[in-house]
Length: 79
Image (cartoon, rainbow, N blue to C red):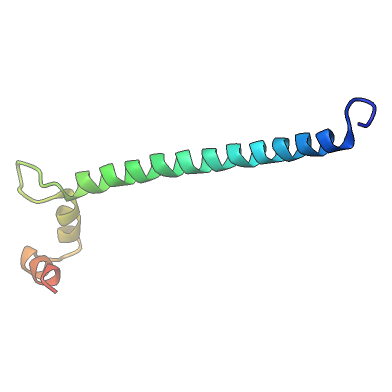
């Protein structure tokens, strides 16, 4: 590499390449995490919002399939 550029510039260039690659990986991880958390928040909102027909949220409907009554859910929520 000394034929093309001085040692100092070669080292600086390699540091910049490694730093750029790490920055790109961090960007990919963070942007994916943000998208996943946004999707999770949307799904949780959907599960906890009551439907107009039954006045129970889909989450409460699922708990009723396991045998929990609305009174039991309400008492648990008050703890």
